Image 1 (tube, rainbow, N blue to C red):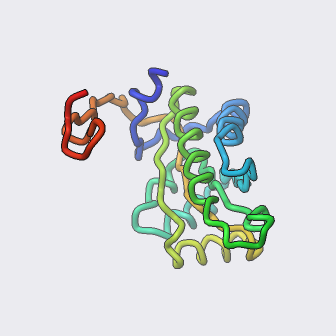
Image 2 (tube, rainbow, N blue to C red):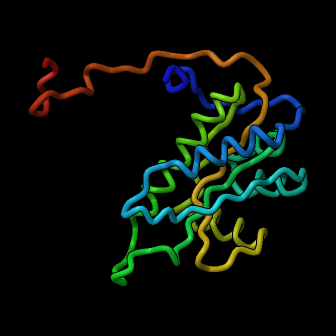
Length: 175
């Protein structure tokens, strides 16, 4: 699992397409994410067309790198796969977060770079994306993952912080 420690957000990409077999393995990783009640409420859009990547880049001030990425994968929630009891189902947010992280880890495993761009719950971004790609109302774009071959080396960093670990009670930093 060294890929967990090697993965970093990559925002600068080489002008080189990503092979379809790598995209498929990345998508397969998303499908393997854990899901509340095993609902698997995800659907994934793969965007490679330059005009669509540029459109996504214009939907958020934080998504500019999408224009130069080889592709973007957008995990979307299918709200029709919600709770059978009719109660409001918000577990999909956790499900889609897990799928997004799995995708990012597989991107690193493929020796590519990627970055998670927050989309939901920003209503402006969700609406712009849904309108541009003609999504039905029950499909919600959750995140945008820009990916491609990194333009430079990706340097791992140790982010472990023992001050944020509490054993048995808050404030107890030793086992």
